[in-house]
Structures are given as C-alpha cells and as structure tokens.
Image 1 (spheres, rainbow, N blue to C red):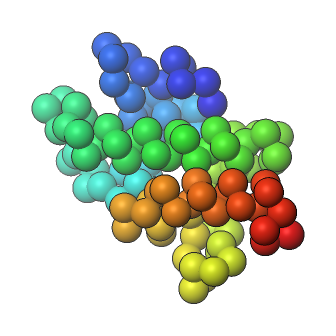
Image 2: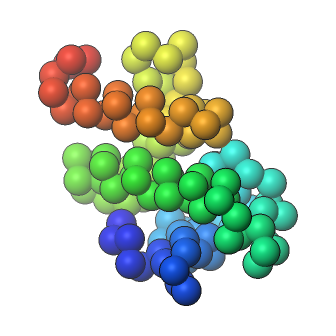
Length: 116
C-alpha cells in the first residue's frame, strides 16, 4: 500500500483505503476501532485520533504485505490471525485498543526470528 494512494488534501482518506481493500467504508471504521460517524463527517475525518488510527492500519499492512504478496491477504491476516503472546488477540484487536505499536514491534520481532 503506497501511502500516497490513500492521501487526499494532506490526510488519509478512508474511502480510498476501503476501495483498495475491497471492503466497505463502515468496515474500515470498525476495523480501526472507530464509529462510522468518525469517517463520514469531514470534520471528524481530519481529527488526530481518526488520522492516527487510519495511519496505523496502513503502517501495519505495509509492513506485512510483502510477506503475503497482496494487500488483501495482509488485510485478512490483520483481521483474523491471532498473534503469539497477546492472548489470542489479532492485530486488528490490538489496533482497536490503541496498541498499534505493539503490533509493529511484534512484526519486527518475527522478522528478527524471535517468534520463529
């Protein structure tokens, strides 16, 4: 996922992210732990929290997409694969809880062979 593809007027555009992931606008909101209203109102799309959550989604997918060969498969992993050491939580659940950095650290640890 090239960042420039998902940015419009200097901020992440949820509709572009949804189109790239072949999913609904509402599902993108749920996936990052936001109310769909946060992505529908222009004033809320630009809020720090909304933009941070969208950025975190894109960062995680960018980090894992090369190993899966597809943004769509990376998105499926993000939503459904339990991560070792997180009590069965998925990357999506952790991002929804505000723990995106833990997901990124986990991916780095896997890449370094810690969980191999």
